[in-house]
Amino acid sequence: MKKIVTRFAPSPTGYIHIGNVRSAIYPYLAAKQSGGKFILRIEDTDQSRYVEGATELILETLRWLGLEWDEGPEKDGPAAPYFQSKRKSIYQDWAKRLILKGRAYADPTDPETIQKYRDLDNTKKVPYLYRNHRPKEADLSPSEIISLWKEGVPIRFKSDPKPRKWHDEVMGDLHAGPEVQDDIILIKKDGLPTYNFAHIVDDTLMGVNLVARGVEYLSSTPNYLALYEALDLNPPLFVSLPHILAPQGNKKLSKRDGAKSVTEYRDDGILPEAMLNYLACLGWNDGTEQELYTKSELIEKFSVSRIQNSGARFDETKLLWMNGQWIRRLVSEQGIDKFFERTLDYWLESSKSYEESYKKKVLSIIYDRLKTLSDLQEMTTYFFTDPKFDIEMLTKNKFLKKFSELELKSLLETSISALEAIDEKNWTEENLNKTLNSLLEKTEKKPAELFSLIRISVSFAPFSPALDLTLSVLGRNVTLSRLQSVQSALLLDNQ
Image 1 (cartoon, helix red, strand yellow):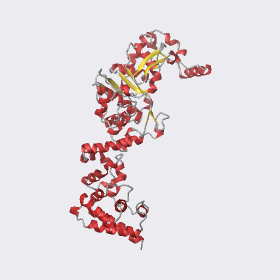
Image 2: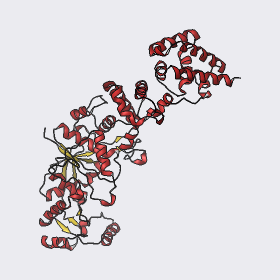
Image 3: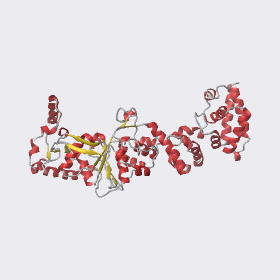
Image 4: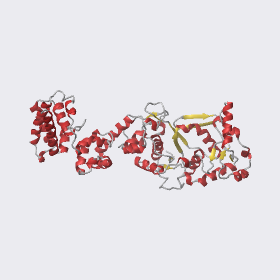
């Protein structure tokens, strides 16, 4: 297999959204599978949209997902620098090449005149194409054009419109007519390049032979092909990635649809393994029923040919399910002690006074119910704070509502007496299980009835792990104290 050299080239204009990240994942997998290179390039030529700290966020997000780059910021290679704003002279040299070949010109036309051209074409009901209004300066000699070129004067491509045909690795064989090709701007007034020009120069100098980007760039491809031709360059492989769609499937996913940045999902407790897995499979599959993939498996099985050519719906419910699966898998593979390190930022403030060993016990009995790490807070409150008595949670429970409060009090009294017989040393899951089962025989109650009463009394939570596990972790003193408090509250309620 030919070694793939590809790149991810984000703009530092804000948070990294889901679509951005998938545009990094696919080229990364293709490069790694072929033993090639994955380059990170920061396209920061639009200074008006630059956001402070956005570059650091890009690096942090890629590293969190395990998408390490071979060349780029903090990893200089032969094509450095990897910030486009620092490559200004390179682009200007390449623009001069086109000028000398008669394929570019300095355009001093003011914005007001350009707007008049737009309005005129609109009045005529014809598509606006700047080449139809090409200024006389376009016909100057290369030396005259270079002398005219100064700060504040953009450089435009002198197009030679013709039918274009090309192959896209996802979309197949495509074509476009001359009507979509124009005299696009190469160098802006500020001396920095446009994306249309800069990415072709950079990809060439960095040896990129596969370009993956959103399907929205398809309409610009004829202009790119014209530039490749004018520069005597062979185009790379094109991989157009269909949009990630909103949950309804009717439009491109956006923040307005509730989509969060990748870092927000991380902060909410989504694991990087799950996010990488989910996004890789959002528009790609290997033809099997497999759903969980490690990064190594993705690299091994990935194929550009199996990227689907239609949009894929973003389903947060599926992401949460996958995250839960990954939590269980990692605990199974690494053990609680290792996985506990992943959870350090997600525990309740009230847990800080508790020993790490105790929190690991709590984690060991609730991890299989977690969908995200942030669920820890809601699901573990009663392990660190005495719950507030809620009579309605007892009396309106579907298994307990048929009992009077006096009956519930009596059942608790019997339960407390049996549990008190277990001393601290023997307060184990095994002994608790035996005692709870003997209580069922003694009280002649169903497990759903008796166990619901005890479970609610110690937790006042909608859900909790198996009762013997919960009582074992809470410990003898806390368990008995809470049961006695509920029993007393019921007694007072009936006096």
